[in-house]
Image (cartoon, rainbow, N blue to C red; front, side):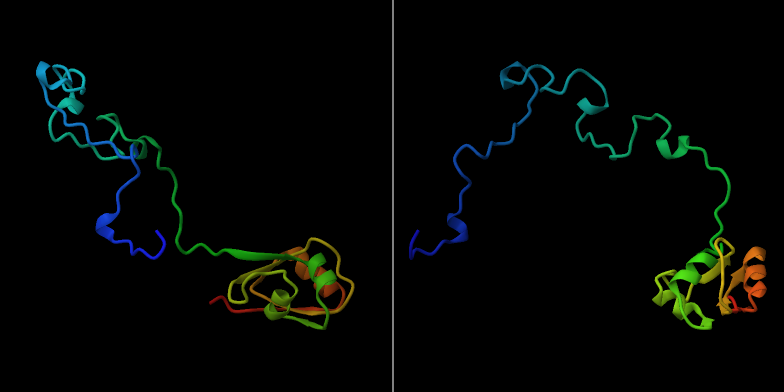
Length: 154
C-alpha cells in the first residue's frame, strides 16, 4: 500500500474472521430443528428472553442470603498508632509534634488522629504532642522528665 490512501469504506475484515449471525427459525425446514436450537420449553426458549446478570432464577439472591449483623458507625475515630520506642529511635529534638512524626515516617497524615502507645523505652526528655496517650505511654514520658500535650480532636 505504498502511496495509496486507505479509506474507511474500503476496510474489510480478513477472510474467515467474521461469521454471519445465525438466524434462528423454528421448523424442520429452517435447518435448526423444531425448537431453533433453544431446547424445549422454559424461560430461555421464549422470545424476548432477557434476565439481569445477577438474576438467580428465582432463587433467593446472594445479597439477601448473607446475614446482615451489627452496625458500622460512620463517625468512628480511627487513630494512627505510634509506639514510644519508635519515637525514641526515629526522631530527634525536644518537641515531637505531628509534623515531626510525619517527617520520621511514623504517621501518614498530620491531620488525622494520633495515639501514642507505651511499647518500647524512652531515655530522653521530650514534649510530645498527640490526640491521645495510653496510660503506660504517659507514665514513661513523665518518668524521664518529659511532658504530654493533648491536641484537640477536629
